[in-house]
Length: 496
Image (cartoon, rainbow, N blue to C red; front, side, top):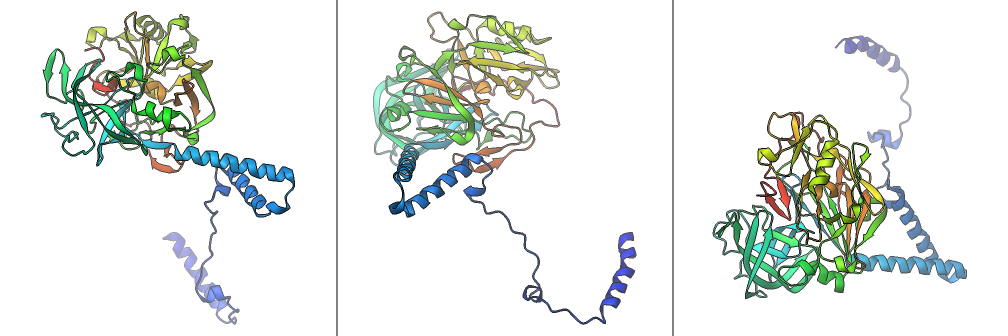
């Protein structure tokens, strides 16, 4: 108000002084009452923030010029054009034989699921994407207690064939059972006809059998196994492996798992949970080259590689890396390791202690105020696990102690694996699961792809959603045992 009072006399005086002067000629724009126009930069590839995108645009422009004046070009210029067109055709073929599936994050990073179509016409289901097993199964409409779960209607598909062969898979907290069937299965733009899968109508928990959905809850309807055929309970070739052998130009699939843990506004189900690209990789998701760790043919069961090093709070532990065989498992939330290794890690975290006496066998807790620096070595490189992923939150509401993502897993002497490396690690890297030659590949995530408050990149690199700040004002998230997945199934305790 004071500013307006001071300015008012000046404005009146200015108007009075200006009045006797003849009006200056006005431009056409002024006569039309136009305002200055701010020009914005065109949103083309030539102005993209990523130098690689701008360089690709420049190469395309050079090729167009050479193509237009090809009849006048020297031989070396014609050769450059030929190479450009050859590379462009190869990239086009790769695009035609790769498909991205947006993942759904369920129970705050506990499970990552994709949409699969089964049958003719297709019925769609949200299934856990599990590189730690090899069978596809969904709950069928014979499940009398699957309230709220989308189940497979066996009467609606013209291409379904149901056998009398039993289908069973065992998990850490129980079994699923039903019948083996065949139908057309589609995901990411790819279809496999006569694909074997399980029609599940029973679960077996703690020695009792019931027609129940106790091992899986809505919005999930089943599980897509993405490991090798050698461990498929059905005895069938997994859906992805059929495509890798016969369809994909690049026989691999790339995985990015979005981190929602720690976001204050997170919901139990988040539609932007990352992506799987079948038949290739999403190069916009990572930076640098892919570090491939070979898998011998004899080891083609789980996606398993050696853990070469463990570093905790700046100290590299001494242990026999030659015996450390880790399954890289998108269907598991945490990181499982032998008890001696787990104890050695937590011994380096001040005031940590085992939770075995609290009925949470295998878990440890430590002060929530401690920032944990934990990393694993694979293929000659070291990869860090974010403290956001290592810290699962308070042991119970109001506690000053938090639960760690590294837990004890005891495997038999005949088991090909003794480590399970799940989403707590995989959220920190971009991962390739390559079929031929078999290998696991890790690459550093691109800047801001996984940062708190980031914008999630879609398959084409465009922005699809944003997130709020990563830390809730209310303090650490209360640890919820139900929100932990092992082998694809959400369980309250990993060893019940």
